[in-house]
Image (cartoon, rainbow, N blue to C red):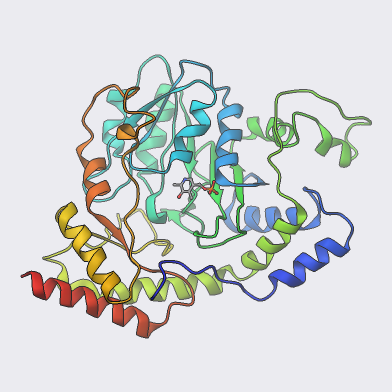
Length: 375
Ligand SMILES: *Cc1c(COP(=O)(O)O)cnc(C)c1O
């Protein structure tokens, strides 16, 4: 069976983890944490980054940083993972779900203005499959209405909107290094801070509401409890693992792109029968996901079953959050037909660094056989 995902190891992880362990400093914010943060800041132009134990945690930090209050409204797509919404729910906010674009599962920026009320506090775009949302439109709307923009860039490492790295456009952004993402640490994440006003407080929230980080830099002579916060920082062992991955990012990305391009080339001929991923002009492709859009849920389930019979594990993705058991009674009742459409019709194909060309060709051949039988 060709798995949907297989975590890739560069070979340096254990070595760096051993270094971290033998250094005697295992807790967070040590040498490897700083090496990762520096590499990411320099490579992608974030003002400041803080490693976290997950993208979910980075979003929780963002929700605290913008002072989310009970009753505040946060606009985000319905077609996303629960972690986009939960951090704001935990602070008492109301989620206002937006529909997806016709051409991509990303939130449709043209629908945002009609969702803004005096209670709106922030917009949380999600760059699905690492493909940029229309950040120019979103930032213009946010600036005009004095809203914060927090990018859920969980899937968006090494991807760009025009010439700006995703995660460097909004005021704050969150990345994931979960084992299903391009760059992994098992569980891990990062908050990127692009607005100077958040830098100091972010470090405090990160370290349980204390000014410990400033103390260790020698900026103050004792540290104490100065704000709310939690334990958001990963241990040095996790940061050491992540550093091995980040050093190899070009290598990892190059192979993922090759696989993605091979899928695209081989499946192009099915263009009339099944929809292939669409890349807007302003977006680059980081090869996080290769997906197909089927005609309806029945065809999607038949295709997944057919692939399974032929030794291929392909999977669907999100179920609209506005229809989830937790939120359906809290949603304002608007229909979000495109979010539902992607919930029903999107299927993701295996994509991981060690997937071979032969395996890709087996998968694309199987898909062509499926559609030959169908037409
Ligand atoms: C993976 C993912 C998350 C959660 O990331 P964790 O690091 O597992 O917390 C959040 N949002 C999106 C869009 C994701 O794909």
